[in-house]
Length: 392
Image 1 (cartoon, rainbow, N blue to C red):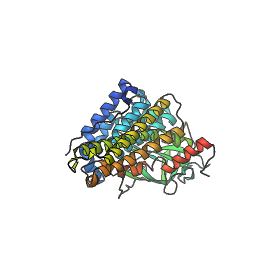
Image 2: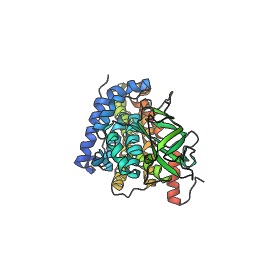
Image 3: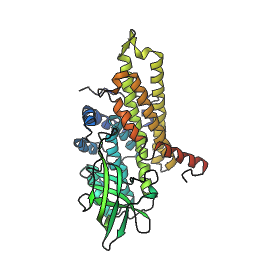
Image 4: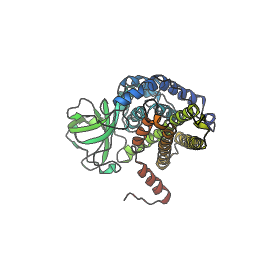
């Protein structure tokens, strides 16, 4: 088992923009990843299995709902702290970060923002501690980039609702205790419902044979006349804007997380290039490899500054959905390009499980698609700057 020798690049002294609390939170997450994730993650990815034993550790470093108020079990941290935690976790593995992102932004966030006080007190402390794990049901087999076309629906049956439909590509689904499910009522209005494991007619078959996010559990949500108590509906927001608000929080976390994956690939490539001798000297001394490495650190630095500024805007309540889309799209594209270049620096060794790069490449192929595809985010920016929608 190779030791985790990761050293984070900080070419523009971005640490000086962070508070002491930010750095403490970041360093705690970094230490945990080095100790509890790096030594096991290659094996779990090879076996396509999620390491459930890390759930407690994720909770301990505040990865579940870091910005949720302490009265509900969260850490009460700001948005930059949340981003830094996601950065460090994804430095370890995108699939592990997905688990934390879903729990925080797609399960705890809607309960906190859109739920009743009773729902907050019932679910949030258990989700923050990892006693409960959750998932988020929006995407359907025939409705991905256009969630407004969803067919999952519920009907009023007196003292309960009856829910029918299916959701696909759902992180955490196979082991989740609760699901935040978005469905249409009889008038076609989208609402969020809290569906608990054990409700009759609710099943979560696992998705197998993935080449990406192999250390993350992915599945479906199937609803066959599921009886959902009426107090399980999220009462404080409905319409498509409700789930999209959750996605804003998740996409923001991804914008930071992708930096972590890029940092890991860059650090691996830099270390290897200094050690690998060809033609009598380290390959780090050749122009082509220096070009690759110099471009990597340049793009990472730009992404760091973009994410930090977005975090400031989030803290001030000023960040727009379009700004979040831009950061998600840019930083994931940056990460996947760096991962591919880093793989070339390592030559044939880059495809082996001895190094993290190929795993990052495969994972980022999912990250560049989920929470809004690469192309959709481009059109969101296009619509924002022109005022004209290209979606219809």
